[in-house]
Image (cartoon, rainbow, N blue to C red; front, side, top):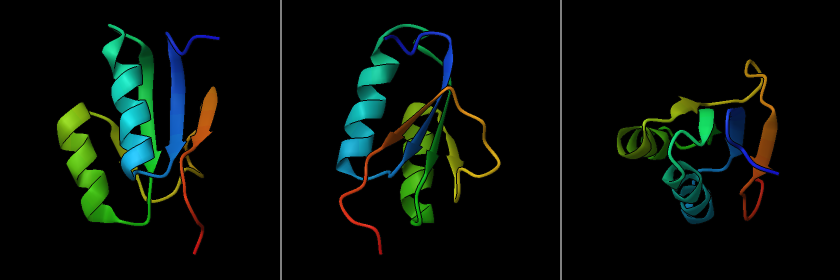
Length: 75
């Protein structure tokens, strides 16, 4: 499966989330849109600046073709 042309939602913006986003963005035009949800607003802002993703505090309003869970624990 490829993410090319799909909308991708990441739950988690830690080290694993960042690595997966970086890998997915490496393929030119890979994802149509990348949305990332995390409880840490500062981390979302950092990834938005680095990768041009769409930060979200929650993924509820986003309909994504693929959702990737990149969390180590849920508080």
